[in-house]
Length: 250
Image (cartoon, rainbow, N blue to C red; front, side, top):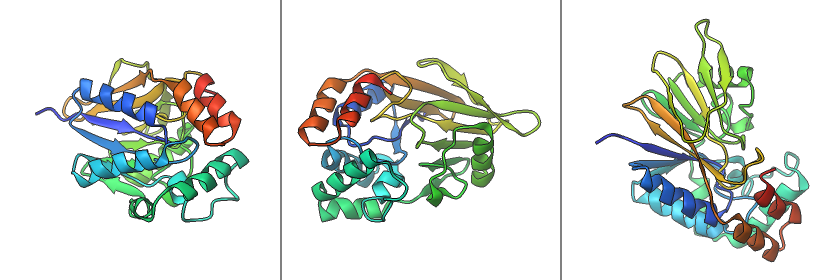
């Protein structure tokens, strides 16, 4: 069977986006799922998202790593977060059960496989939550992982970095729905974008599908009912800016 790995990052308690992306991943023939951190934060369905991810992990269908918003439920991040993010963290902490909290506590910072690294932020000092948003950040990430393929989230816009002939990493902007050859002769750092809160002006959810045997990655944008997700944010009493961001994608 051809392995197809569905990659989803920054789910951020967005149930509508999650269900749409999971349906799309199944349609694409995904054989396993990797959740690249930030299961919670910002939006209004943290318990549902934790339960769905935890159920898949326990069934052996998925893997998941810890994100900074997940960690913020049990480690103080107040000095590192803007007021809206912190308000969502504080609200989320009051919603989740002790069992759900323990699931988040048990998530690893990094998952390493033979030639693949999965991490939320950067493989370079992953507990410092550095952003892979430029060539140098991607190079540090790739050097630290030591793997051919490194998959990250944290940055809410999809990006792909490839290794040049002289060893530097360069940014490439992937086109949604278009297969990108990712030869094992280079190193690659893939930033899959945010499922639950895109910030590139397109409100559609982000996900990616990686086919290691074929050496291909495809970035996808998945339409979903972001108006309902935004209304849930308002009904929960979370900051209005978080609801508006779902609708505008900014």
